[in-house]
Length: 166
Image 1 (spheres, rainbow, N blue to C red):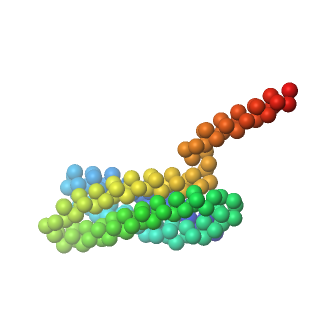
Image 2: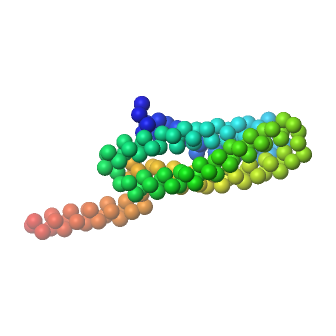
Image 3: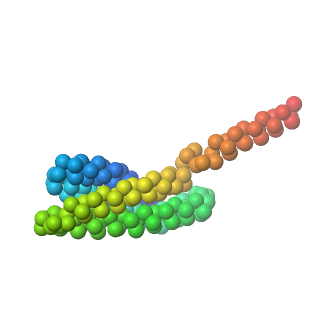
């Protein structure tokens, strides 16, 4: 496996894990189940670690992809979004560790911490959409915004060329 392959393997965990974690955390808060809240915290910590692994393989993946002729600009946009996403995920992971400690010590502010973590997790999930989409656009040109227009323009040009040949 090369860095590009590892990058694609790792990058799904932080995004999908966030959504599962948010659901588990919200349910745990509503049902007042500390075990569910702690499970969500562990998931967020795991998301942070997997995102770090994704970032560590990103540079190698970039080098491989650029050799395939992919524009540096689209890769750079993805990289910038990923760096912002990581900052929020690091915060989420660290606050989740504090939340675990608060729950184990039965601290009076543990409930407040759970709401802060829920807010951070939702913010992370919103950012994850942009990061995931920009990463997907690198190799999946069909999901780029201008793909439909470009395909229509190519079809129109080919029809005009065919019409000129007649």
